[in-house]
Length: 115
Image (cartoon, rainbow, N blue to C red):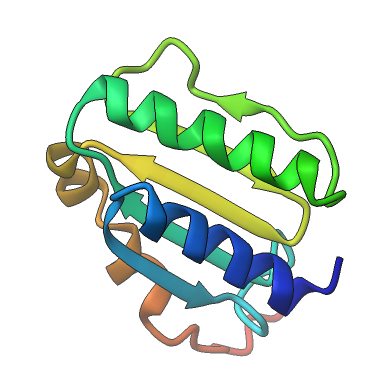
């Protein structure tokens, strides 16, 4: 599946399932780990778990691949590494604490480090 369509699918799925404060960060040129990072909040540990399971099943149904949830034992955070998209689903307090939006949205400076 094309990366932009995959990104839209994840964003729409989160939105339809009442995730809060959905933010997409373009990582191109900032990191090789993925092209996009999508961050959203759930209202409770049950909501966070449900959102992550719905994302997995939607991706699989659409032929995007089989992925797994990281942070299965955590009540406040789940991560899905969907190839070129990393999806974080947080409890609002954990999201505020880690503040990934700030960390990944700031420009990366090339300081010309010589080895």
